[in-house]
Image (cartoon, rainbow over all chains, first blue to last red; front, side):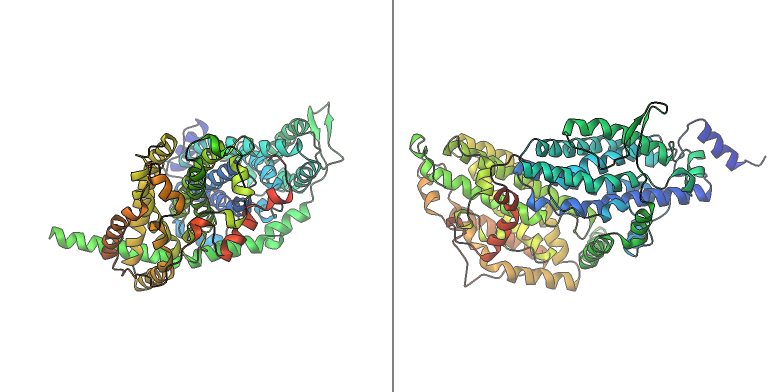
Length: 314
Length: 260
């Protein structure tokens, strides 16, 4: 009897059984996961740049230690995710190549500049906050290695969000200059954070199939709404405002309505025309190119060592 | 910065500058290493070097907190790190040197970790309990730093022709800065009388032996310097420290008396 692989695959998805690397899977499922996991990994790595730039300027030793640890966590998340993607038969070098040539995308949010210390708070609170909603959902994604990587990542991300909120909380209770710095950062990061959830459901090309395969479990708009409802509550604690005149409670929907997102800006940034797209890719390319001799040396040394050991054994 | 309470604690006249020296050196090298965060040649090594930066920052904070305690209630770790002038910093000159390339960064870390390894191995027996406790904790971290940096010196020295050349250039580049590890400052000499500080001259032999052994494996040649630089431990620095501190201290200086 011929086994119907596709039916078997779909029945696993149905029964909430994780798909594992050696299982049969539709090619499109494999490609979608590669695209999504590697994009996610690249986002962690590029995301190190806007925050990394403030490590040397952190205003206290405690903040410096926390920020260093946080950016280091992001590198670690990049590692788990690259490893998860590698189980789908793509090498890390191949993924890196796709990032460096601009073929693969990363989260557009990191193409915005980090201009003040308050941005470390806003990135933690809003950007990590938006990321967490997506990542909590992904802990239940259908591809096993991705789901397991997410469980680990989520634990650390919630610490990241808390530290970001705490930075803003301290600023919001500080001097007038600090309060202004806090509000300014919220104003600049709010809309790009809403864009992080991706195009609205009616425009999202990848959503339908991903929902069916349980790669995604909530739509972009559902997650975005959840984020807005959450932020509206938290901004009160900061005694700051969200930069949206149309933001108000809708009793009928039991959700907050919010203003129109500037999708032109979103697509411009996705296409590479954001404020820092060039700087971010240049920085990654520079690190990669400057490090080529180090990687070559490591390979050469490992080969020499192996040969010497073989001679010893012989 | 002058302390009002120096008379109250025996030795504090010398113990404070000693703590500041130990704190400054670890803070400044942590700063340099942290500049690599997000820009390293290999993701795993980016993480490893950031980890070392974090450990060194932790050591710095321990020494600053101890210094602040000795100096009195008006001081804390941030005042000492962020509100002193360059000529009040007592770090080794090697720490403030710009990173240059990965070869210089790795070799400096190896020299420094090797020095710290022997240094803390002695300081953990200090008559000052606080210093002994910090050294005991730090020694565990430094043991790993030394292993990691040793492996990289060997890998790069004995890797490709290019990497060997870069490492040998790094040896040349850093040669004037190693002897300062082994020159006693006045405050160290004073504290040595009570076995609070350690005799850094006495660890030079061990340091050199370890460097020679690793260099032999790495196919590198150690180059002695006819023109060693000193003075960092007494506040005489290069322009590099001035710009480093301008960057590091910028927020504290621009917005004085703020809480962060």
